[in-house]
Image 1 (cartoon, rainbow, N blue to C red):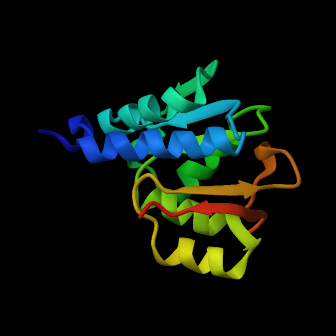
Image 2 (tube, rainbow, N blue to C red):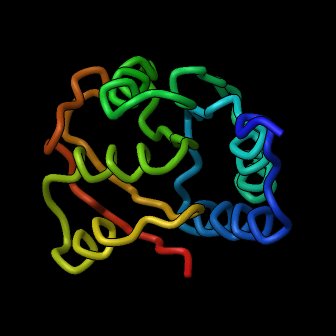
Length: 148
């Protein structure tokens, strides 16, 4: 089967639900969800949304399937006026994007994020200005949830 059509395994579904619970527990419900249209990322969002609840603005973006860091940054910049944006994408691009954006934060959390970014991990990166102006290195890693 094509990679695009590959579904999550049951462990992946469980990880998605766990990340959703962590997002809900931290009260980080997204205003906007940017999700790759691949089957496994859609299934990941389904699992996350079980705990997070319905989000009115969910966008399935082809650019998140086969893009580079520049494509991910463009998607984030185009997210609109939402304060909290959740990106459900693919490695290695999601890890490289988080690395590019997080210029500051707890040194141990940054080192952990940069050394290992397994599926269903979550980097919460805060910015001073609007997302439309996000630049590499401008964010602060506020939280790092490493899925073990």
